[in-house]
Length: 136
Image (cartoon, rainbow, N blue to C red; front, side, top):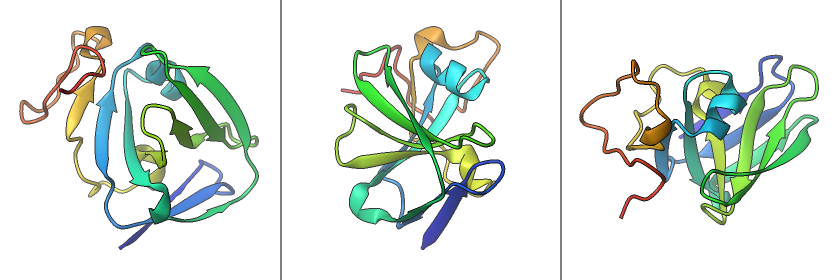
């Protein structure tokens, strides 16, 4: 299986194969600001499953609430943050699930940073959650 994620203007793309290692719904303040929404949903793929990256991008380096560094790749034309690498999960690439524009994409396997989640937001009870980013 191959999936293609792209920015809003579709000039920046990333193509991945196989399923994501995991999908996370994240309510950290950094994801809220990255998306302009109340949470971000990210799919992490092993770098060996990244087939292609096309288009022009700019990078933005940011420290997470947990203290890990993330380098985001975003479109300089439309501003969409499409994919990133993080110290959180070395040798993996995170891709914003919304960039796939696929309503059949698998649901998150976990919810992180619930301590920052907006109180009116509710996710399925089937999704395990953590107040921070710790899932052990």
